[in-house]
Image (cartoon, rainbow, N blue to C red; front, side, top):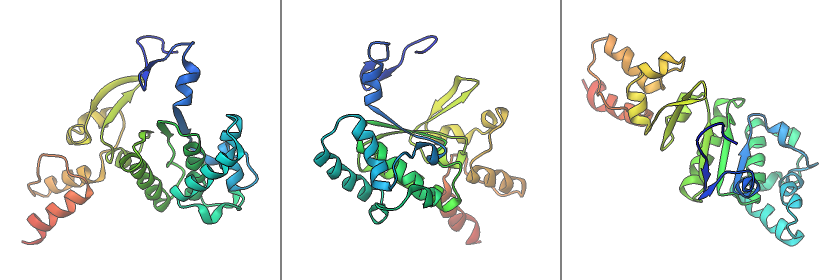
Length: 222
């Protein structure tokens, strides 16, 4: 329970009486997927959460098939989770969460142990789950480049909210981030370097695609 204020999840106020109803609406994917595995193979692991909820076997089998397809892991259904790559393990962990059909998925530093390719895969999957499947995605991360891809960014320091806005407004004023020990997203760091070389750069925030487009139009053509 919060020490002060209140928490509302999907229209429910979090209290001791509603905590289990709130939990039913939320799934979590953690930093180390190995800590979430309990099944001998991938499909058994995905089914575990449903078994705990008493979901009928036929329905479990149907959902296992659906969620493994959703995360592109059907071919690995009979594999041992411990033998998968980091990115594949996180996909299995995500499938296990999807199988119990939450409305909100919290990713707690879920890409921090992955290589760049695995990180791109999981961030892309987060985006797809939000855009196409209408899940609410909350990503807890220290990775500023990952955070810059979100629709909304909440900056926390010592447990308190110090900013809450769209990425463009937060990252365009980098002083706030550097004061609390965070790096700038790569496009903003590049803009600072270009300024030092006397190149005029736009004031508004640009993501990587926007920066490449601006460089091609405004700098490289000269």
